[in-house]
Image 1: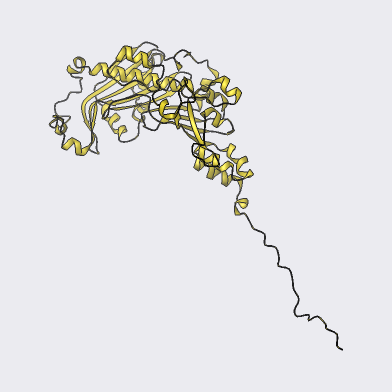
Image 2 (image 1 turned 45 degrees about the vertical axis):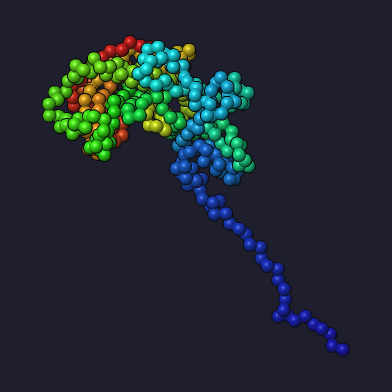
Length: 386
């Protein structure tokens, strides 16, 4: 009987193990950081942190960070919903009711915004009125945790460019009214530029105006205008309204500056800081020199009103009854105010005549409006510290 022998041509071999390659692991850290810096948004970066341990270790090294504030929570009831918190008002309400009641709507709750309560931070709770929401991983309805910007940023070690965006501007203004401001601060106000208009007519509306002033929208604005402020400006409340715009903008700017102190002191790598709002109403800027000045020079502040005290100011005002921009938009009652501390006004004529910081304050089309206004007659004013 023959013996069965194995056929050497029919052997079985185990399949080789397939090693999956994670191509992200092949990317250098420098390239990943470039991507993270492009993302910028702090909530998106937070989601990146949970992807892998490597991402978790790289995100704190991001240099360009954007914090978008979701809601303002009332200090009186930290557990209240965002809807009820919208009704809260800042510490400036009583001031403006007494001084300018009926002229502008009350300020919203800025005075309670950026600065988290020290005791709350030490206990680990998040009771800062300014809240950045983050969704729970389970995605359950209502599973949103809120943190203050100071808490959100505490794990970032290398921030150089920081932008914080509030959900809305602090100053309640009527529809159709234009009010924009930009302020630069060091340890106190360096300069502020305010652009306002009593009404804004867009091309279609300016050609078919139904407000009884349709003739005004078709005027040749430079035909009989010598650049002077008309007498009616002083008698019909125009000057009073501009005073309100100026003081309210300065208060909003100084309150934002005061409330940024904890962030500035904790992040010494900062080169540039911007605090703006979703409405584009106001922008506070601080460069590296100004940030360092705030760290080393004592801040003159009012703890009661929670804002930086503003020194005595010198102001230059320009006014035009009408300005038509190249895009067809018409600004009626256009007003430009350029503000600097009075001590800075004692300088050479060349520096005083340099208005580049005014012309560069706003993006288009408002930059064009500024350049048109500064060509008109200048009015000088003084204001005491407050």
